[in-house]
Image (cartoon, rainbow, N blue to C red; front, side, top):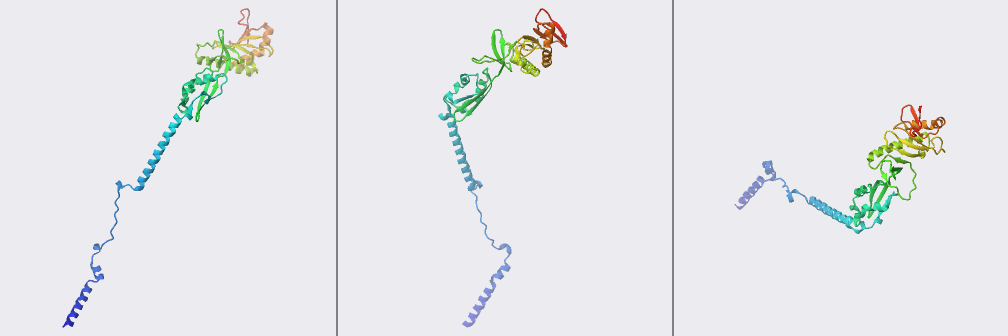
Length: 310
């Protein structure tokens, strides 16, 4: 009896094992019920920013702070350090001056002592220097750490200017200049340009005078050295007093009215015909060339005159 029960229990266990075989369960279980591999979900902190981002921000912040600190320190050094201050006028280098005195150049810098050279307004100082009569242009530069360089271009006089009994100098731009002491200058004397005349008008008439000198030298070299006086009072008549018209050794002075144009042709005619005029009409003191196809000899003498066709 017990043997029969043991056989029944064995058969029941075999049947139960058969019903739970894994391959049978796998075939019967739907695919959507299979357990998948779990996904790992990472949560971002600090609003989605990574630690690398914040590290870069920190590095750039430190760098910017260092730069600002460096600029502040350098600025204080360049503006207030004794090593960049203009303490004495020996720190100002002056070039190009011959007539203008060093004292006149240093005067505009009188208020810049004990000031950093970086704080000196160079354009203002240049403008002040160019107000000096003999200064045509000026250049002012900083030479670090604590020097200033001033370079001048002085005006070039081209003639003496006579106003009454006073004798000054004048340049090509019509600027009237005081005569410097101790300078041996040789120029023709120009008249007819008073100080009350606008500088632009003086410059315009001076250019007529310079054009005449150029044309005269083209006809006969060194003719401008024989010009002793030029009257520019009448803009329509350039009157010139010259010597050596007949020959280079002739010291006779002659006054010539050239009008306002064709200086080269008129002067050539004087040079080529002056000896003949003297032979035919005696002593020639003045010649008037203002009229077309006509030459008037000795118009200023008040005693005699002769009209010659060109």
